[in-house]
Image 1 (tube, rainbow, N blue to C red):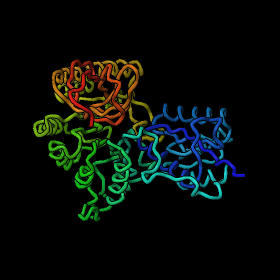
Image 2: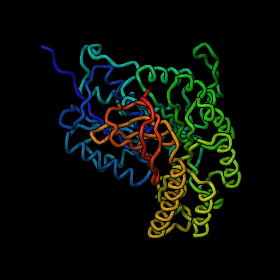
Image 3: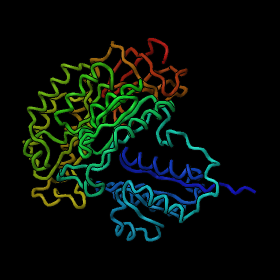
Image 4: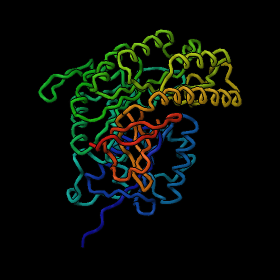
Length: 442
């Protein structure tokens, strides 16, 4: 009598980079014959992939571990919070094993210890592209681990180490397999995408019969050959980022840049240990839009950083009015255990942080609304994410999944996720658009 394959459940918290770690863990386990459970009670063991960047994220991770223990009882912890084993053991002494970020083998070995693999791992096949936690039409492509920067509010280098880039042939090979499996959009991610390949001295490798440097521009050109949407995230504004703009203008990759500016005030940026030349950034943004008019720029900012004055905050609002960014996220500053900024003087009162967060969010939404309104009457291409009895929901080239806006196609129930559709825009509000198809999907 054949015994059922052991089942593993997973809770994946935090950023898209952690999600990719979860996908790699599941791919390894699935290749060994484990089945994947979508519920606590159906799993023989549960993995919790934690986030530990902010105090609020640490609290959420500890809560998720507690829930998994209560619902299942057999829990393995990994991810960024895994570097603080004492905190996890203090709150949840019954966890079976703890490991840090991207320690895939340690997680797999812990699963082996909790529930041994089946005797014949070849009974279950894994697709060449691996297993993914995203919808089938898009996937995240992680090109490196770690970071060489030393921002005072961040402990990522302490958690994930220094920059560790994947060789370009490995990245392009994975991307090709994903495209062949039906993925129609790849979201390129890392801690510092612009620095890709610096640690490997931009070593060249052969792919598709051509020498390619392990460098962001060569990577973008190679990915552009796959004939699918390529979206760049977490791009630190190094000078060579300018070289991506022509590739966007010609359609090789999407006209979308995710650059975490964090602030605009030179005083605050210096305290953050970030580049502080706001005027040069405005000039570059103007040049990017001149050369690629369809460019959408997304960014994230921190308000209430220690020492931020009302003058600093007003400077940021004025800079936003000039930059007119398309997509913006904003966070209230939080102390992060181990970060240098914790010791900075003049921490901002929580009520002031909240008030500035509201003012910033309102200003960013108004700017986004103005830029969206300019698209009414134009025709764009949208990728469809969801279809139900009311219609379809998609995204434009300016919208990354889950963090940006949406394109609503009311009444269009015959479309399918992954379809690319030409859409005439009828209305706009904040970050969202409404429209109707003007041609068949591709």
